[in-house]
Amino acid sequence: MIDPNREQRFLGDWLADRDEPCPVCGYNLRACTAPQCPECGGALKLAVSMEDPSPGGWLLAVIACALAAGFDLIASLIYLVMMLWIAIVQGPLPASAVPMVMLMLASVLVPGVLCAIGLVLLLRKRKRWRTAPPVVRWKRGVAVLLAVFIPHALIGASWLSILLAQ
Ligand SMILES: [Zn+2]
Image (cartoon, rainbow, N blue to C red; front, side, top):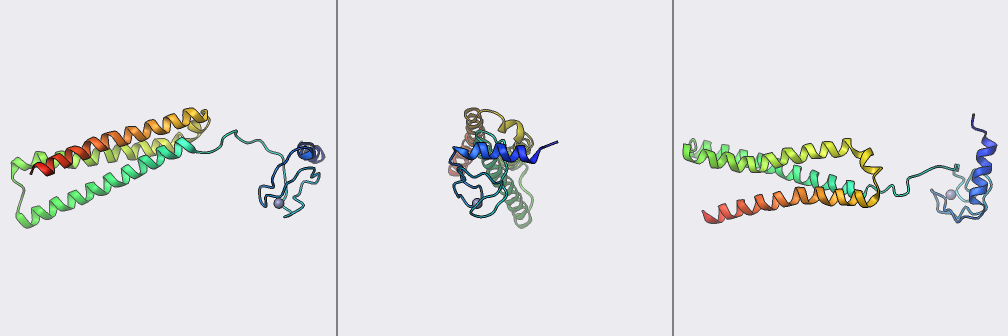
C-alpha cells in the first residue's frame, strides 16, 4: 500500500532545497510542502524519469526512412503511370527497351520498399533504441541516415547520367 502521507513527505523533502519548476505553469516549487502547485493549483507527485528522454537519433532515422520511402514510392507510381501512358499513346514498348524500363522502375521501387520496411522496424524497436545511451542513439541515427542517403545519391547520379546521355 502506498501511504499518501509518506509520498507527500518525500515530495516536500525533495522540494525543500531544490529549484524545480511546476511542469504546468513553471512556477518555482522550492520549499513547497503541499502536493499542489501554489500558483496554478495543479496536483503534484514525485516521479522517476529517464535521464535523457529525447527521441534524438531515433527521430532522425524515422524521418530519413519516411522521407525516402515516401519519395521513392511516389516516384515509382509516377514512373509507372508515365510508362503506361507512353505505351497507350505510342503503342507497346519495343522489347529492347523493356529491361531498361524495368531496371529504372526497380531502382526506385526497391529502395522505397526497403525504407518502408526500415520505418516499420524503427517504430517497433523504439523502446530498445530509447534505452541505449544518447551517444549510441545518435550514432545509430546518423548510420541510418547515411545508409538511406548514400544509395539514393548513387541511384540519383546514375539516373542523371543516363538521362543526360540520351
Ligand atoms: Zn503550477
